[in-house]
Image (cartoon, rainbow, N blue to C red; front, top):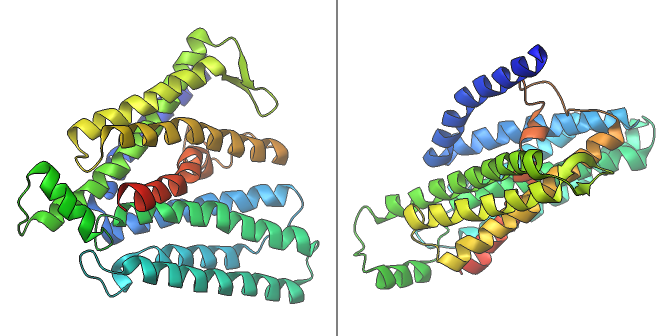
Length: 313
């Protein structure tokens, strides 16, 4: 019992320090947020490679980290010729394709001369880790920067007409702040989904959700978590995200409530296959970075595609 309360105290202490920092980085955006995401992704990738090592593979850790950094840079628009509502997306896709091609080429070339066990396993784990954690989390930077130089001018014109807002010198700062509130709303939705799923399952859980992967999760908890995610997105749409329509906020909440929980199950599957309880012990009381950000990793690219191709199109 004492150990349980000690673990709870550690979790609360970490959350007390980490959450304000994460929210500040999310709202600030720019290079500060990009570096924050890059650190999280790099540590999560290292933990993933540790799981791969437990399975007998020898992933190319340095190559993977370099590839991850390059992919994250390709999602950061400050390097591109930008204008408000310009063609940043074109440059981003072009850079991403080039980075991905060079990364895949480098992995296979290095494996050709490396001679450290199974080339299939080594290259496979190296590439899968960068694609799953690197690309997926890099899309979080993409979401934050959608509201800078990438936002379509036609969308802004429609928003001004619909809301009666008069464009002025502060418009760009207002629009960029939407990106911060969007990231904060996503994080809050995931956190509330996890919290409600935990307590809903604890008090009402009778039907196992996926016992082969995570024996403690229940359908009842998953439903509570789902409605927590949807409700959180509706709240933020009403008070902080004027560019979103109600049905769009609900769709985002559904994506988080469903695929965020699937991301958690996928990470549990990988850990169970590797025979470990936590991806690491880097975060006291919380396990590792891969443990804490598993839902965010899986749901980020879906939200990025929905926002960029549907909401802001």
